[in-house]
Image (cartoon, rainbow, N blue to C red; front, side):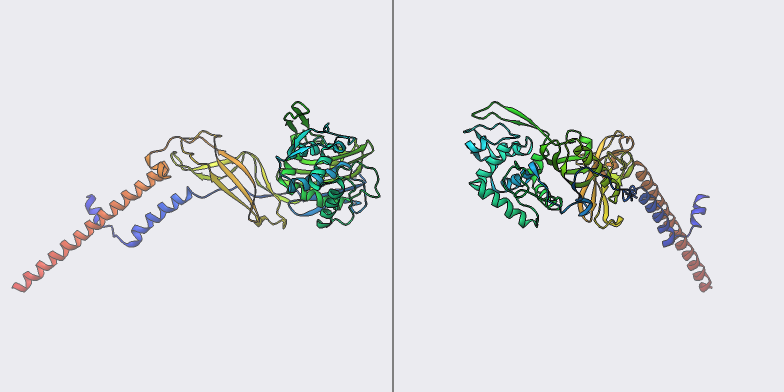
Length: 439
């Protein structure tokens, strides 16, 4: 009965290909990535904040655009943000481990200091921390003497470098900003933005000016000491302030140059002729404004499924993953097509897995450049797979493959039966013809 049924089935190329195609499509469905949507953020049209600082500028590093400006070409006293230029030149010219013997003149510098003593032996690295964290006028002066030989020669180096940067309304009279004489020591918000950009491009200056606390080892004149930053908002990790320098003359005359990096949005802010009381408020107001008006995209959202990773050893081998944190992209051309994401599996990760286990990284590329990343975690438990899972074949895929193989075997069997049937028919016909011819 069964053989009769099978013998009536015709085997053609289409008969074989169709089930194979169906099975391939079923397997392909298991491997389609389901990347999260890239969603526009920012780009709002809101009123500019009214800051107390008489000169200010807010610049977006991502888009290379100034997004807020106030009296950007008016000359103001920079005060201690001058030290960013001093630190930049010293970091470029001097070895970090070079020993410096503090001179009498350096030790006698007034105002904010790191309490250097004449004859004290310190390193360039220690002087940089003292200059940028403690705003030490003595430390900045010692760096100037070490780098330039004399204060006068170093100041010339500072002014020459400012001109190289394109600063047209900046002039320095000393290496630490300890003066209230605007006739010889001045800058503008637009000029100091150029200086700050160069300083933040220097990894040493950015790292040191972004240090919250530094332990200075003992010298021949002092015991071990701990320095703490003067930078407003920096101790609050949620503020976005990651590096920079303050300037202070008195409560009514303050400055700041800061670098902001939060949710992958990077900005530089310069405030000149501000008050000590309003300076942190101005900083927050401008950064809040910038975070709302700069257009960008959310490339991944915390807790949302962002795709699937190939992972061997589990009952399923394409594991859905969720982002550990939200990540953003701010392409200069503001085009969604400039934002790409890529999932990368961690090494030595295999099933079984627990929900929430870190299994890889989602990388965000903006205009082809890696700009952000976040760990990704398994979105579900994955039990141990059968042996084929070691070859990235899930249990379901293995079942489908076996069914397809069985179907192929069945079709081959049918083909053989049909072939045998046709041969028998041909033999019977041949015998009948022979019988008729024999008569």
